[in-house]
Image (tube, rainbow over all chains, first blue to last red; front, side, top):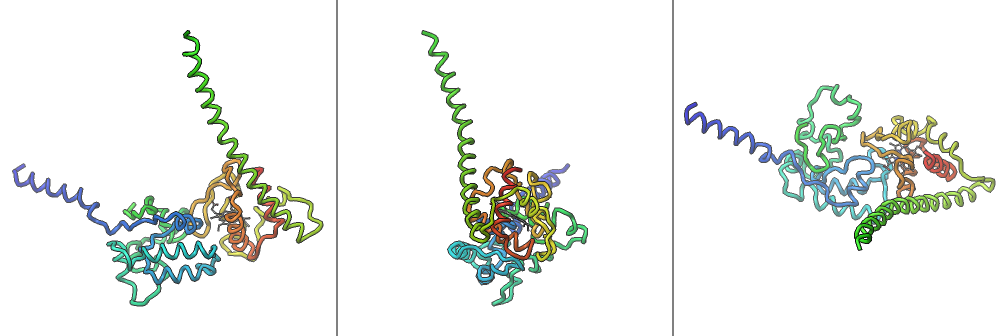
Length: 158
Length: 149
C-alpha cells in the first residue's frame, strides 16, 4: 500500500466510526417525566414529545376521552401535569435534529395527532406489507417491535 | 476465647438472612391487605346494588376473563385478547402491541393493590371488551380469580 492509500483508508474508517455518532437524526430526547412515562406507557410506549408540535399535545390532552377511539381519560391534575411536560418539550419548542425533520412537514397552525402519518415517518418506513403483518408489530405505532431502544429516544435502524 | 469470633459472624449472617427472607414476606402481606381493602370496597358496592349479594367467586371471575363478549371493540372480544388465556403468562396489548406483565397474583404479587390503577383499568378494559362498565360483582370476582392464579 502506498502512503496515500493508507491515509485514505484511515480517513475512511474514521468517517465510518464517526458516522452514527454524527447522525443525530435518529435520536430524539427521551421522555424524562415519570408520570408521563407511566400514564402514557400504560397502553403504548410513551412517545417522545418532540414528534409533535405543542398545539398537537394540547389537543391530545383535551381529547383523552376519545383517544383514537378509546377513553384514555385520567384525573385532571395528572392531565395538566402531563400536558405541561409534553408542550414544554414539543417538537416546535426544543432543539433537536430529529424533531426538526418531523416539524418541517407540519403546516403552519396544523394540528397533527398521528406521528405515523408524518411524511418523515412514512419515508423511513416504506416497507413491504409482510413487515407490518409480523405478529409482534400489531400496529405502526409499536416502535418497540423493531427499535429496541426507542424508549431511550434511539431509532437506529434495527 | 475463640468461640465468639467464629460464632458472631455466623449469627449476624443468620440474622441478615432472616431479614432478607422476612422483607419480601411482609411486603406480600401488605400487598394482600391492600388487595383485600379493594375487595372489601367492591363488596360494599355489590351489596348496595343487590341485597342478595353473597360474596365473590373465582369461578365467576374466570367467566368474566374467558367469555367472548359482544359490544366492545372487535379487536378485543375478551380479556384474553390482551392478557392471554394463561394469566401467568406475559400478555400483549391487542391494539398497541405493547407487552403486558402477567396478571396472576402468584407471578406478580403487586397485582390489584393500587385502587386508582385498578379502577382506571377496569373502566378502560371493560369498555373495550364489553362496551360497558363491569359491575362490582364482576370486578370482585375477577380479582378473586386472579388472586388464586
